[in-house]
Image (tube, helix red, strand yellow):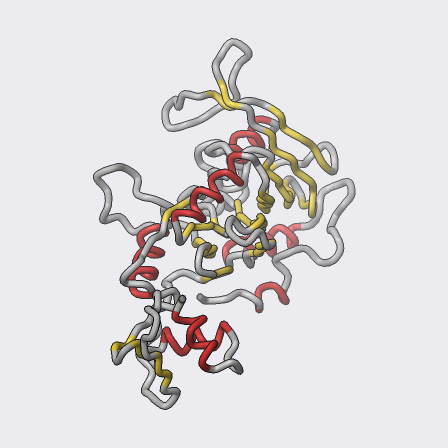
Length: 322
């Protein structure tokens, strides 16, 4: 039996959450040995003892904000500038989201540490990024992503004025990279199917806030597709154009806002939302001060992300890349 369940069996008033917390604090022993893994298997007849008065050991903490965590799945809030995985086979010492998650899991479950990525975000794309914490979960999540049974919603600040309130970009992406760039495939070129849906959340003078949903998850899909229809992501120095007279952000204003899927083990709904990062809200505030462009909708209701209330909800510490 798992240690947390064995502890609850001995103390029925304990919730699953409190049992796990007691174990992680080092207040539970199995046959006299302190164990800090909630999933530790307890042999029949083993003595499980909980001492709530024992001084708690420092708890394992992740260096990244956590949006969802259970035994099999972890969703973190990735900041800008952090790689999802190493940039190459020989770059294992790079600071990556995967390395940080593995370090956290190794301290949390030293005997059965497992953490693998199932999708990724570009270095400068922020937001929800999911990891599998068991082999079974990884296999299930990969199937969910491949079958596109997942909700991936982004927010993007784009240059230009959208000609309509919503649209769809259904254009395959070229297989080959040219000078570090991807592009929409020409009819005679091999390419992979890619479909992006967008909707205007708010309009500004020469810019707009879009809500973007991915029906497929190709690398750089959102950035390539939006640039293809004349709405490049603001701050994108690879696919963007840069508007004269406008202060360009230091990174593409693209944020993985929402991630939702059926749990690969339990089937329960997992849904997380990542609060907007500070630089995104600053750009929105500046654009709002500059005034709105023509056409509706100027602002969706309820108030769009980036307002003062959402800024206060920011926590310190959820496909392929957008």
